Image 1 (cartoon, rainbow, N blue to C red):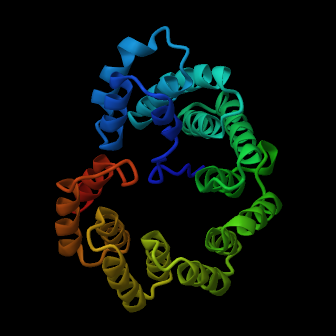
Image 2: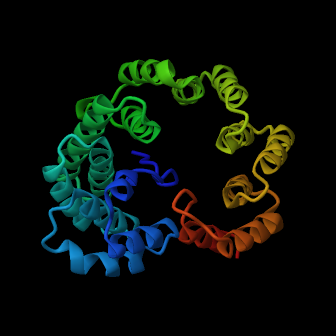
Length: 287
């Protein structure tokens, strides 16, 4: 499974502000938003031990998740879900945690963990079919998991149609992934292009297209789209990361990639950006 790590929620706990969060929780959330997960965890642990506040436990689980402590993440998120069983955000995060446990466990436990991940994703989407994070995670599951674990192209197709009802650009993106999996590459490209046309201010749409063109060996076209993405979001660290990652994948422009990754590592990142550790791992490939 390719559970999405780079699209982390920024408003998932906005209701807490409306009702008044504790200073500790607000501080922990701020640290989390700035990718200071260990520091956020240190603030949360004293108030989370006997907490019955779902928001606190959800953030605790997210901190553990981002620190790759997936068992602790599932435990915290299970506690949050017990308090708010119909909270789609909590369920989606719980699905992610079970998914990572499936990926990192042995052959005897992985199928059970994967099934729990699917169930959480499906419940989350049923509760809020407009949430791009939840539908994206479920789509990834359907595309990657074998049929005996609940995956399958037909389920992916049905989900893509559901997504398109409320977000046409995201619907085209979902269909692009499906067409690529079917090796219908021209059709996939057209869907990536339609997604970018429908959401011209979303830099991620152009990054998706640029990466796909590079994957097809069309490097000049890919470069042009990367340049356009840099103009759409001139201060976005993500553009640096995705461009450098693409260069390294295709063994091109490695000195430029090195410079971009070094700039990325020193940029002010948020939870919506790939972790610095990923950039450092990429740098090691070309050191």
